[in-house]
Length: 326
Image 1 (cartoon, rainbow, N blue to C red):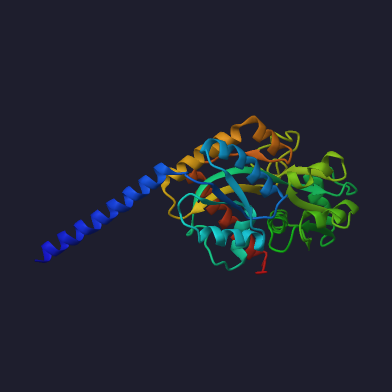
Image 2 (tube, helix red, strand yellow):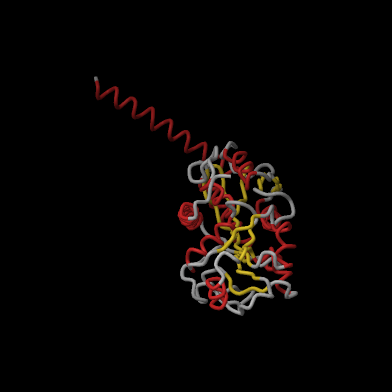
Protein backbone atom coordinates (compact mmCIF):
# COMPACT_ATOMS: atom_id res chain seq x y z
CA UNK A 1 0.00 0.00 0.00
CA UNK A 2 2.79 2.41 0.97
CA UNK A 3 4.54 1.71 -2.32
CA UNK A 4 1.34 2.39 -4.23
CA UNK A 5 0.84 5.71 -2.40
CA UNK A 6 4.44 6.73 -3.04
CA UNK A 7 4.16 5.78 -6.69
CA UNK A 8 0.93 7.72 -7.00
CA UNK A 9 2.42 10.84 -5.33
CA UNK A 10 5.49 10.57 -7.52
CA UNK A 11 3.36 10.43 -10.63
CA UNK A 12 1.40 13.49 -9.50
CA UNK A 13 4.57 15.48 -8.79
CA UNK A 14 6.09 14.44 -12.12
CA UNK A 15 2.93 15.42 -13.95
CA UNK A 16 2.83 18.78 -12.19
CA UNK A 17 6.47 19.48 -13.03
CA UNK A 18 5.85 18.46 -16.61
CA UNK A 19 2.97 20.93 -16.86
CA UNK A 20 5.10 23.69 -15.32
CA UNK A 21 7.92 22.89 -17.72
CA UNK A 22 5.57 22.85 -20.68
CA UNK A 23 4.02 26.17 -19.64
CA UNK A 24 7.45 27.76 -19.20
CA UNK A 25 8.58 26.52 -22.59
CA UNK A 26 5.40 27.80 -24.25
CA UNK A 27 5.76 31.13 -22.45
CA UNK A 28 9.36 31.48 -23.62
CA UNK A 29 8.46 30.52 -27.19
CA UNK A 30 5.76 33.22 -27.37
CA UNK A 31 7.98 35.88 -25.77
CA UNK A 32 7.95 38.80 -26.37
CA UNK A 33 4.35 39.43 -27.27
CA UNK A 34 4.10 42.93 -25.79
CA UNK A 35 6.39 45.85 -24.78
CA UNK A 36 9.10 45.22 -22.20
CA UNK A 37 9.69 47.50 -19.22
CA UNK A 38 13.31 48.16 -18.28
CA UNK A 39 13.53 49.76 -14.85
CA UNK A 40 16.61 51.91 -14.34
CA UNK A 41 18.04 52.35 -10.86
CA UNK A 42 18.70 56.08 -11.36
CA UNK A 43 17.08 59.26 -12.61
CA UNK A 44 17.07 60.42 -16.21
CA UNK A 45 20.23 61.92 -17.63
CA UNK A 46 22.87 60.05 -15.64
CA UNK A 47 25.43 57.50 -16.81
CA UNK A 48 23.24 54.51 -16.00
CA UNK A 49 20.28 56.05 -17.82
CA UNK A 50 22.49 56.72 -20.84
CA UNK A 51 23.59 53.08 -21.00
CA UNK A 52 20.02 51.83 -20.61
CA UNK A 53 18.67 54.06 -23.38
CA UNK A 54 21.63 53.34 -25.65
CA UNK A 55 20.93 49.58 -25.58
CA UNK A 56 17.12 49.86 -25.38
CA UNK A 57 16.87 51.02 -28.99
CA UNK A 58 18.74 48.07 -30.61
CA UNK A 59 17.02 45.65 -28.22
CA UNK A 60 13.66 46.95 -29.42
CA UNK A 61 14.71 46.16 -32.99
CA UNK A 62 15.98 42.63 -32.36
CA UNK A 63 13.13 41.67 -30.01
CA UNK A 64 10.43 43.18 -32.20
CA UNK A 65 8.82 44.96 -29.22
CA UNK A 66 9.39 48.34 -27.63
CA UNK A 67 11.77 48.29 -24.67
CA UNK A 68 10.52 51.12 -22.47
CA UNK A 69 12.94 52.74 -19.99
CA UNK A 70 11.31 53.32 -16.59
CA UNK A 71 13.47 55.52 -14.33
CA UNK A 72 13.02 54.69 -10.65
CA UNK A 73 15.49 56.90 -8.81
CA UNK A 74 15.97 56.82 -5.06
CA UNK A 75 17.86 54.96 -2.33
CA UNK A 76 20.80 54.28 -4.69
CA UNK A 77 18.54 52.18 -6.90
CA UNK A 78 16.69 50.23 -4.22
CA UNK A 79 13.31 51.50 -5.40
CA UNK A 80 13.90 50.07 -8.87
CA UNK A 81 15.14 46.82 -7.33
CA UNK A 82 12.03 46.41 -5.18
CA UNK A 83 9.72 47.08 -8.12
CA UNK A 84 11.55 44.57 -10.30
CA UNK A 85 11.87 41.88 -7.62
CA UNK A 86 8.09 41.99 -7.08
CA UNK A 87 7.34 41.67 -10.80
CA UNK A 88 6.34 38.46 -12.53
CA UNK A 89 9.33 36.46 -13.86
CA UNK A 90 7.99 36.49 -17.40
CA UNK A 91 10.60 38.58 -19.22
CA UNK A 92 8.46 41.70 -19.38
CA UNK A 93 10.12 43.53 -16.48
CA UNK A 94 13.90 43.82 -16.32
CA UNK A 95 16.31 46.03 -14.39
CA UNK A 96 19.44 47.89 -15.39
CA UNK A 97 21.67 48.43 -12.37
CA UNK A 98 25.13 49.73 -11.59
CA UNK A 99 27.83 48.92 -9.07
CA UNK A 100 26.26 51.48 -6.75
CA UNK A 101 23.35 49.15 -6.00
CA UNK A 102 25.71 46.38 -4.88
CA UNK A 103 27.59 48.82 -2.65
CA UNK A 104 24.31 50.06 -1.17
CA UNK A 105 23.33 46.51 -0.34
CA UNK A 106 26.46 45.77 1.70
CA UNK A 107 25.89 48.69 4.09
CA UNK A 108 22.09 48.87 4.20
CA UNK A 109 19.26 46.48 4.98
CA UNK A 110 17.04 46.03 1.94
CA UNK A 111 13.68 44.39 1.27
CA UNK A 112 15.24 42.44 -1.59
CA UNK A 113 18.36 40.37 -2.13
CA UNK A 114 20.24 40.72 -5.40
CA UNK A 115 21.36 37.10 -5.19
CA UNK A 116 18.05 35.61 -4.10
CA UNK A 117 15.51 37.64 -6.04
CA UNK A 118 17.17 38.10 -9.43
CA UNK A 119 18.69 36.15 -12.29
CA UNK A 120 21.79 37.70 -13.89
CA UNK A 121 21.54 38.35 -17.63
CA UNK A 122 24.66 40.26 -18.66
CA UNK A 123 27.11 42.94 -17.68
CA UNK A 124 26.39 45.49 -20.38
CA UNK A 125 29.25 47.95 -20.04
CA UNK A 126 31.83 49.34 -17.64
CA UNK A 127 33.35 52.71 -16.91
CA UNK A 128 36.55 52.30 -14.87
CA UNK A 129 37.16 54.78 -12.09
CA UNK A 130 40.12 57.10 -12.40
CA UNK A 131 42.19 58.80 -9.77
CA UNK A 132 41.81 62.46 -10.60
CA UNK A 133 43.62 65.17 -8.70
CA UNK A 134 43.70 68.95 -8.51
CA UNK A 135 46.31 70.14 -11.05
CA UNK A 136 47.94 72.38 -8.44
CA UNK A 137 49.20 69.41 -6.44
CA UNK A 138 52.95 68.70 -6.77
CA UNK A 139 52.42 65.19 -8.09
CA UNK A 140 52.76 63.95 -11.66
CA UNK A 141 52.37 60.23 -10.95
CA UNK A 142 50.76 57.83 -8.50
CA UNK A 143 54.13 57.25 -6.82
CA UNK A 144 54.61 60.98 -6.28
CA UNK A 145 51.03 61.40 -5.11
CA UNK A 146 51.33 58.63 -2.52
CA UNK A 147 54.59 60.13 -1.26
CA UNK A 148 52.91 63.54 -0.96
CA UNK A 149 49.91 62.06 0.86
CA UNK A 150 52.17 60.23 3.33
CA UNK A 151 54.12 63.45 3.96
CA UNK A 152 50.83 65.27 4.64
CA UNK A 153 48.66 62.86 6.65
CA UNK A 154 45.05 63.99 7.09
CA UNK A 155 45.52 67.04 4.89
CA UNK A 156 44.20 65.68 1.59
CA UNK A 157 40.43 65.66 1.03
CA UNK A 158 38.82 63.22 -1.35
CA UNK A 159 35.42 63.91 -2.87
CA UNK A 160 32.72 61.28 -3.21
CA UNK A 161 29.15 61.18 -4.50
CA UNK A 162 27.81 60.50 -1.01
CA UNK A 163 28.35 58.47 2.17
CA UNK A 164 28.76 54.74 1.50
CA UNK A 165 28.86 55.36 -2.26
CA UNK A 166 31.19 53.52 -4.61
CA UNK A 167 33.37 56.65 -4.83
CA UNK A 168 33.54 56.72 -1.01
CA UNK A 169 34.59 53.08 -0.71
CA UNK A 170 37.08 53.49 -3.56
CA UNK A 171 38.82 56.24 -1.59
CA UNK A 172 38.84 54.10 1.55
CA UNK A 173 40.28 51.17 -0.42
CA UNK A 174 43.04 53.40 -1.80
CA UNK A 175 43.93 54.64 1.70
CA UNK A 176 44.12 51.06 2.99
CA UNK A 177 46.28 49.80 0.15
CA UNK A 178 48.70 52.76 0.24
CA UNK A 179 48.87 53.40 3.99
CA UNK A 180 47.73 57.00 3.59
CA UNK A 181 45.37 59.11 5.73
CA UNK A 182 42.70 60.86 3.68
CA UNK A 183 39.67 62.92 4.66
CA UNK A 184 36.37 61.95 3.07
CA UNK A 185 34.15 64.80 1.85
CA UNK A 186 30.73 63.50 0.67
CA UNK A 187 28.58 65.36 -1.87
CA UNK A 188 25.14 64.77 -3.33
CA UNK A 189 26.37 63.61 -6.70
CA UNK A 190 29.11 64.53 -9.15
CA UNK A 191 27.54 67.88 -10.04
CA UNK A 192 27.69 69.02 -6.44
CA UNK A 193 31.28 67.81 -6.03
CA UNK A 194 32.78 69.36 -9.16
CA UNK A 195 33.02 73.02 -8.02
CA UNK A 196 35.16 72.06 -5.00
CA UNK A 197 37.20 69.63 -7.08
CA UNK A 198 37.95 72.35 -9.64
CA UNK A 199 38.82 74.94 -6.98
CA UNK A 200 41.12 72.61 -5.07
CA UNK A 201 39.08 72.44 -1.87
CA UNK A 202 39.02 68.70 -2.49
CA UNK A 203 42.29 67.54 -3.94
CA UNK A 204 41.40 64.09 -5.24
CA UNK A 205 38.55 61.79 -6.21
CA UNK A 206 37.75 58.41 -7.68
CA UNK A 207 35.02 58.79 -10.29
CA UNK A 208 34.13 57.17 -13.57
CA UNK A 209 35.63 58.57 -16.75
CA UNK A 210 32.22 59.63 -17.97
CA UNK A 211 31.81 61.90 -14.94
CA UNK A 212 35.03 63.87 -15.33
CA UNK A 213 36.23 63.25 -18.90
CA UNK A 214 35.41 66.81 -19.97
CA UNK A 215 37.41 68.33 -17.12
CA UNK A 216 40.36 66.04 -17.83
CA UNK A 217 40.39 66.89 -21.52
CA UNK A 218 40.40 70.62 -20.72
CA UNK A 219 43.12 70.04 -18.08
CA UNK A 220 40.96 71.40 -15.27
CA UNK A 221 41.58 68.08 -13.52
CA UNK A 222 44.52 65.71 -13.86
CA UNK A 223 44.09 61.95 -14.25
CA UNK A 224 46.97 59.96 -12.75
CA UNK A 225 45.78 56.39 -13.33
CA UNK A 226 42.79 54.27 -14.23
CA UNK A 227 41.38 51.63 -11.88
CA UNK A 228 40.87 48.85 -14.44
CA UNK A 229 42.65 45.52 -14.74
CA UNK A 230 44.12 46.53 -18.12
CA UNK A 231 44.64 49.85 -19.83
CA UNK A 232 41.57 51.47 -21.29
CA UNK A 233 41.20 51.54 -25.07
CA UNK A 234 39.76 55.02 -24.66
CA UNK A 235 42.80 56.39 -22.77
CA UNK A 236 45.68 53.98 -23.51
CA UNK A 237 48.28 56.47 -22.31
CA UNK A 238 46.94 56.29 -18.75
CA UNK A 239 48.57 53.58 -16.59
CA UNK A 240 46.42 51.28 -14.48
CA UNK A 241 46.54 51.63 -10.71
CA UNK A 242 48.14 48.18 -10.61
CA UNK A 243 50.88 49.23 -13.04
CA UNK A 244 51.40 52.39 -11.00
CA UNK A 245 52.13 50.42 -7.85
CA UNK A 246 48.79 49.81 -6.12
CA UNK A 247 48.26 46.03 -6.38
CA UNK A 248 44.77 44.65 -6.83
CA UNK A 249 43.14 48.07 -7.13
CA UNK A 250 40.27 47.60 -9.59
CA UNK A 251 37.19 49.81 -9.25
CA UNK A 252 34.61 50.03 -12.00
CA UNK A 253 31.24 51.73 -12.30
CA UNK A 254 29.69 48.92 -14.28
CA UNK A 255 26.19 48.53 -15.72
CA UNK A 256 24.29 45.27 -15.98
CA UNK A 257 20.93 43.66 -16.67
CA UNK A 258 18.95 41.52 -14.22
CA UNK A 259 15.62 39.70 -14.49
CA UNK A 260 13.31 38.61 -11.65
CA UNK A 261 14.31 35.21 -10.25
CA UNK A 262 12.62 32.37 -12.10
CA UNK A 263 12.55 34.02 -15.52
CA UNK A 264 12.59 31.14 -18.07
CA UNK A 265 16.13 30.31 -19.14
CA UNK A 266 15.40 30.61 -22.87
CA UNK A 267 14.30 34.23 -22.27
CA UNK A 268 17.46 34.98 -20.25
CA UNK A 269 19.61 33.46 -22.99
CA UNK A 270 17.79 35.41 -25.71
CA UNK A 271 18.25 38.65 -23.79
CA UNK A 272 21.95 37.96 -23.30
CA UNK A 273 22.43 37.19 -27.00
CA UNK A 274 20.68 40.42 -27.98
CA UNK A 275 22.70 42.46 -25.47
CA UNK A 276 25.88 41.11 -27.08
CA UNK A 277 24.57 42.09 -30.52
CA UNK A 278 23.65 45.55 -29.24
CA UNK A 279 27.01 46.42 -27.65
CA UNK A 280 28.85 45.22 -30.77
CA UNK A 281 27.08 47.78 -32.92
CA UNK A 282 29.50 50.57 -33.90
CA UNK A 283 27.01 53.31 -33.09
CA UNK A 284 26.46 51.87 -29.60
CA UNK A 285 30.15 51.48 -28.74
CA UNK A 286 30.86 54.95 -30.12
CA UNK A 287 28.10 56.51 -28.04
CA UNK A 288 29.31 54.76 -24.90
CA UNK A 289 32.89 55.85 -25.59
CA UNK A 290 31.88 59.51 -25.38
CA UNK A 291 31.39 58.98 -21.65
CA UNK A 292 34.42 56.79 -21.08
CA UNK A 293 32.34 53.62 -21.06
CA UNK A 294 33.37 50.35 -22.71
CA UNK A 295 31.00 47.57 -23.90
CA UNK A 296 31.16 44.17 -22.16
CA UNK A 297 28.33 41.71 -22.92
CA UNK A 298 29.31 38.97 -20.44
CA UNK A 299 27.35 35.72 -20.09
CA UNK A 300 24.78 35.19 -17.30
CA UNK A 301 27.20 32.86 -15.50
CA UNK A 302 30.08 35.33 -15.78
CA UNK A 303 27.92 38.21 -14.61
CA UNK A 304 26.67 36.21 -11.64
CA UNK A 305 30.22 35.41 -10.54
CA UNK A 306 31.23 39.04 -11.05
CA UNK A 307 28.34 40.27 -8.88
CA UNK A 308 29.46 38.02 -6.03
CA UNK A 309 33.07 39.17 -6.30
CA UNK A 310 31.94 42.80 -6.19
CA UNK A 311 29.78 42.17 -3.14
CA UNK A 312 32.60 40.41 -1.31
CA UNK A 313 35.17 43.11 -2.07
CA UNK A 314 33.03 46.04 -0.96
CA UNK A 315 31.70 44.26 2.12
CA UNK A 316 35.31 43.81 3.30
CA UNK A 317 36.17 47.46 2.60
CA UNK A 318 33.03 48.76 4.33
CA UNK A 319 33.77 46.67 7.41
CA UNK A 320 37.46 47.60 7.57
CA UNK A 321 36.72 51.32 7.11
CA UNK A 322 33.75 51.16 9.52
CA UNK A 323 31.39 52.60 6.91
CA UNK A 324 28.03 52.84 8.64
CA UNK A 325 24.50 52.32 7.38
CA UNK A 326 23.04 55.55 6.03
